[in-house]
Image (cartoon, rainbow, N blue to C red; front, side):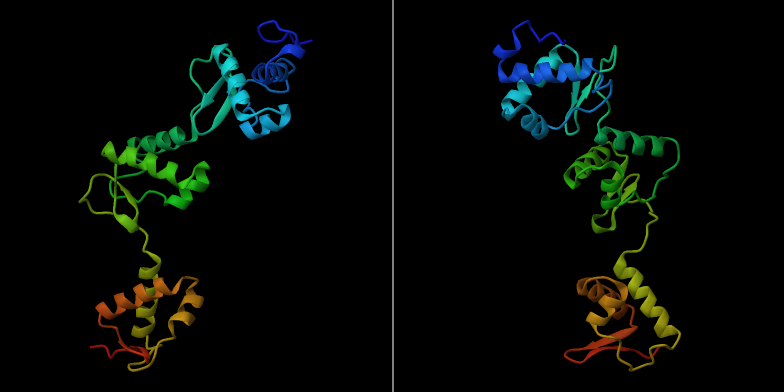
Length: 233
């Protein structure tokens, strides 16, 4: 039988002591092994029928005895023998991966970092956590931001290599069609809704693409009539 923490009989334990004793019993019985993550606070509240304050009190008692470690934003874990530091958080893991990638040459100056949704999926982090971590790298001078275009390795002002935006990709495809004669001079392009459906984007992205084509002199737009291919020199 597991000895309760600090010696009181089980029936006289405070809610916090009851949580601590229960988690300790799981550790000693092998149901929670070294390195395992403890259940989340709401799960512990439900399991022991106590409030959040009691759960935190119980976990704090275990931390003071060196039985668990807590990583901010990730949770609490069963401490390994001789463990001095908590496991690396997901944020720290992402930062280390990017720093190592730059130091080891996997990412060079001008390379584009994975975009925010990709990083969120890779590291199971929220958007605010991703942005805070990338801000730290920017303050270190390792990366810089170019607004909607993304984040790039190296300081501001350097030449960058990046994937085209959706608007750029669409304008490039339509420009190719015009040059190939698939849209003849004076011929109306499909409407914004049709283009949005074809390319799987919003009408806002389509408008940005058409604006680029107008700037390039490839199309002209007549209000209330549509956008038309222009004759090429």
